Image (cartoon, rainbow, N blue to C red; front, side, top):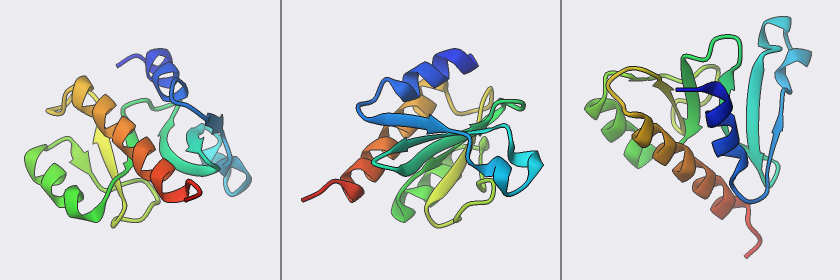
Length: 115
């Protein structure tokens, strides 16, 4: 997985912005790049340790995803109920990771779109 290709993929979705907001809480989080839609996070990763990505999911699907892949684990400092961590170069393909990132974007966009 190439970090620039991945970043460009995340930015290709409509209305997406990126920030590095966590450095103000602790210096060790200066390198966390977060992608937002409608001012809500849907994806983030560490640019200094680009070995995994955290994405939002729905509770009903998280356990199924975890059970089918060894490269899926608990997220970094996020709710275990709504987030999963996907490790690159494991048993989850890049195509599946991209699909889960897209799904994460859609979940957040749908939740916070005005009805």
